[in-house]
Amino acid sequence: MKKFLNAVEDYLSESLAGFEAAHGDLVVLHTDPLFVRRRNLHPGKVAVISGGGSGHEPLHAGFIGYGMLDAACPGQVFTSPTPDQMIAAAEAVETGAGCCSSSRTTPAIS
Image 1 (cartoon, helix red, strand yellow):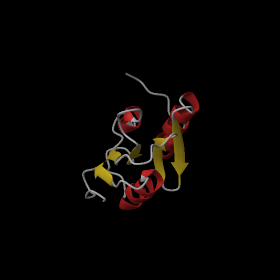
Image 2 (cartoon, one colour):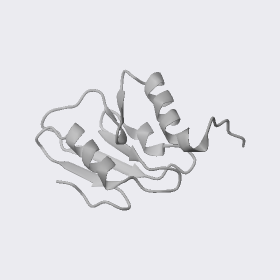
Image 3 (cartoon, one colour):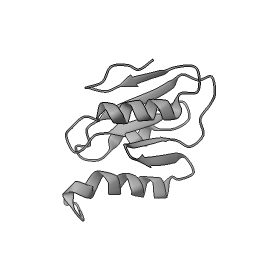
Image 4 (cartoon, rainbow, N blue to C red):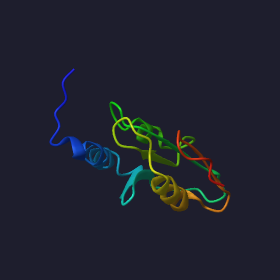
């Protein structure tokens, strides 16, 4: 399978910008640091975040939604997200009930 890329270093940010353009009613893209979160947060709900490398595509962003993830922190291609990404996402989605995360490099944030 072939892919069309403008530049390898822009692959992740461009993919997520396209995802937000297509699903802006559901998600919000944060760019510094890079993560995606639910547009509508629910107070009193434990926030759930996932992170992982973007091998073929920024996979975890597709799992944001009702009854699913509150935020996703995609790392660059085949790398995990940075701790700064995970902390920023946790702060953006935590509404008072705590936050849990799943990533290969960062511990759960509570």
